[in-house]
Length: 93
Image (cartoon, rainbow, N blue to C red):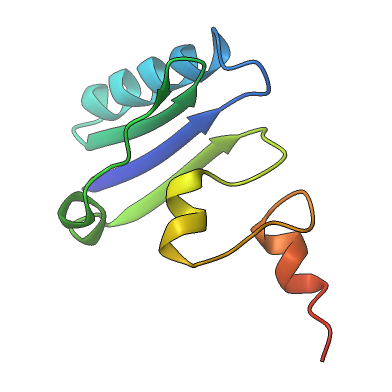
C-alpha cells in the first residue's frame, strides 16, 4: 500500500524528523511505501498532488497549533482558531 504522512512538532527540530524516519522505515519493513511531508524548523516541502492522490491512506503525526501555509493557501483559509478542525467546528452561520 501507499501512504502519505505529515509530521510536525511545536519546535520542529528533532521529533518531526524522527517521526518521519520511523514512519518511512516501518512502512518499508512492512512492505509499504510511505512518503512524509515534514513541517519542521527547516521549513516544509509539500507532497505533490500526484503523490497524495495515489495514496491509499493518510497518517498525521502532528502536534502543531495551526495547519501549514500550503493548506491555508489551498483552502484560501485564514486561521482564527488553533487549527482547521477548530475553525470548522466554530463556523458562525
